[in-house]
Length: 280
Image (cartoon, rainbow, N blue to C red; front, top):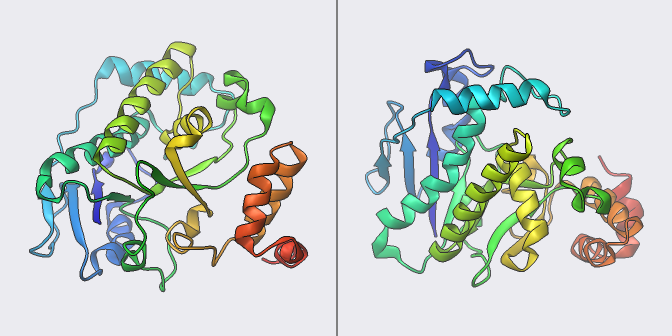
């Protein structure tokens, strides 16, 4: 498994909620890993291990596109954080999929191996480890991705309802696939982005990922987690039990019994439901 990550300092363009120093602290966990292969897209002055690949990213922002997205953000029914979710930020988050595709072309000597995206500042607990993530590849022909919340049927069936509110359907901070599936997903992200802009929505990449999962469930190898347990739950549920249990109930009440029963099964069965719903 080859890990891929990257960072671009948006403070060159606009005030940001998180300082470059804080980003450096958040990344210490990633760079402390030994024995993993990493392709890193970034312009920070940092020491990378000799076996890691460093790529200077080419990031440009079209002023007309930025202005268009700014206008959509100002009219959005969903409240975005103006110190974080700016037009340039939304555009930059799309780069994750292009960087993943580029990594598969850089590491051609590892054809057939999975590539795993890990956010530069991925939320984690001290005991979380990418070495553990590397022990489980995505299923053949699939994209391994965390399902976070259950999206109700009425939102799945109506684009306006879905994109007018952030359902946090999936966690885009950690996902894995092989080159053909990465290329497929990059194309779907581009298509969904164009469709959203044409319909008048400014959206995050995770919102688009959620729509793609809804439209193409057969392409995904899903597991259950929250943003803070993407790494911890990669090989099985060890954290976020209460959220997963509550989403199981929501899914069953919504008629999505397959999803609900799958969540319960991976939690340890129906007899565990009361325990997990009462857990913190």
